[in-house]
Length: 218
Image 1 (spheres, rainbow, N blue to C red):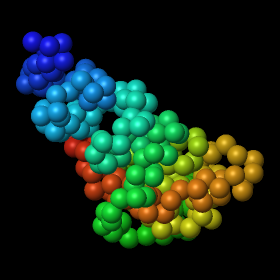
Image 2 (cartoon, rainbow, N blue to C red; image 1 turned 180 degrees about the vertical axis):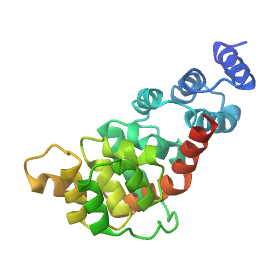
Image 3 (cartoon, helix red, strand yellow; image 1 turned 60 degrees about the vertical axis):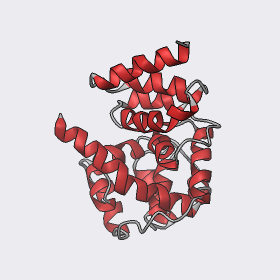
């Protein structure tokens, strides 16, 4: 038996025994990313990898996201799962793939911008409020707000059809490091609109239910 097939058998055994998180996802990534997975087994291994990824912790997602660059054969829903954890060069690839992809359906109704800015100014858990307003999980909203570059927030705002002034106010209030307002606006302008809509829709329909399900199970 080849080394690749031996490794594959080991991973299938892990999956059969209910292994979750980093060990299974990392092993599957080795096979899928490095071209060691037999062609005939690639579709089921990809499906298993997607399932394993959704059970990973954030630190594992960061490690896996760093390896995504140049893998245009991976399903778009899978790479979207990694956007919030990916380095800048991989994020750009993900945005471009979304920009070139077809429609993903309508995003939730645009939230009240003035109310969002007022809530961002007030004490309390803004991630909870942002998640509720934009129909995404609080965990997702919190991860977006922790992105120091502001790009994830720009994606969410543009995808939800909030204007750049609203984005700029939220970014300033939530600590995006920039002394130059034009720098924040450039972040917003550099996000492709269709890509932002697709990613926002993804967070609303795929990402949020997955995290809520895990939280409920815990």
